[in-house]
Length: 206
Image: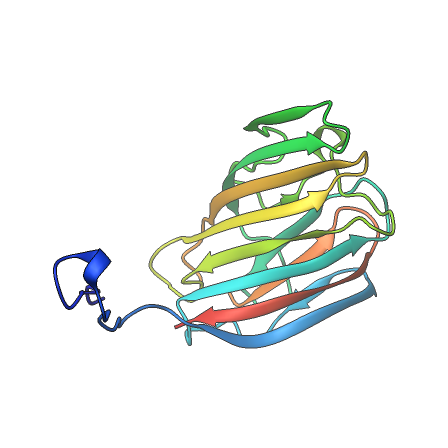
């Protein structure tokens, strides 16, 4: 990546800024739309074309109240979603009434060498997403180099949602898929019930 340079030494006097190279661009690949869907599975487009993939969640709304929104990975094109994962999970929240706030570790939402689905929106401690008409969630999952066959695959995620008891909650998730096999599919679902509505957009990063 080249360094951005100014045409003189003082920022306040700059009249031009140099160009940049090597910065990643987002390339839209696909959109998955939920309509009372048991899950949203993406089984194509995750390959060696890009070393980074980002999945953006928009207006994710559950059919069932107080549930988790979660994902798992596949190394066999979606036949099985059971990749071993280890993760960390932090959360911050504040109630609509202003009566409660918190920031800290969520020990019930992390994984330790587990093939279970990883929570993005957690229902741990009775803090699942609500299914009121005005409640939903949004955020992203960033997956790094899924086609690599030498190293494990890292992921990071931030999700904001309306908790079923009217808290605004922000979840921060980091971890890795502990496999050297190529990851080529991903599945998103609720811990119980359907995804009533919402979209997941997949982008590659150049």
